Length: 277
Image 1: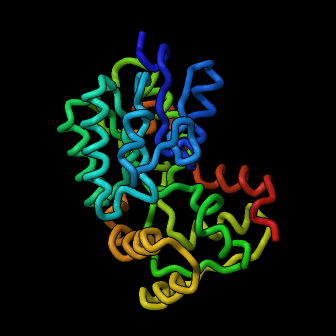
Image 2: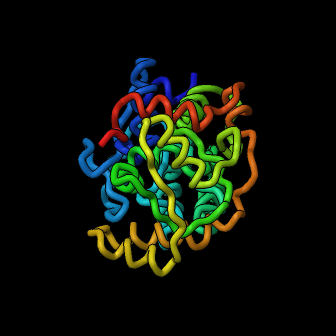
């Protein structure tokens, strides 16, 4: 029997987009979970490594997501230190949420591998849920999304698929030592995605390409944490340069089915009324 079934799974970032969904799925299967967050019991804080060992006590596996993103400086070192500690404490089964096309994320992957853990990596495309559960929600409600990105295709992946994949690799045999690239089934530009959301929501929502300088100025007007502001700039100046304009088969490999299409996400999410103003 896999340790995940007998002992709690520590979900680092258990209140985030994928962690919350993973927790719900494991709980629905009557599998024990421990939420790794500053408000968790015991609390977990990436910036306070004295919280790491108590959070690891007695767990069978860990799902690792790093806030705000593995792309930020220092994330790889933190993940490496945490993975080493987990293995030292006898928690070998580690699943890392990673990002495509991010140099720092791939450094974190290598640190995870070198820890001696029984690792699995979920390397993900841009989350569809960034349009409904993150910084793009307010612009959508305002009727215009302005970003420094042109006709670059992104295979937006649904967080529901990521959570399904995480459950599978944590609870079933055969996934140790595997790296899965999770993407949606097709490439869309950000303008395409905004248009799909507008259609699903029954609203006229525009998309405007702006310069990087304009974007940086817009970010500065919001009271964002410095690392989150840095991350947004990094993603739109480095990662969204076309390097990820390719589909991957990770969802099919893990789940044996096609990934959810962005239009299905848009229609289902629009039905909640979140994009209605």
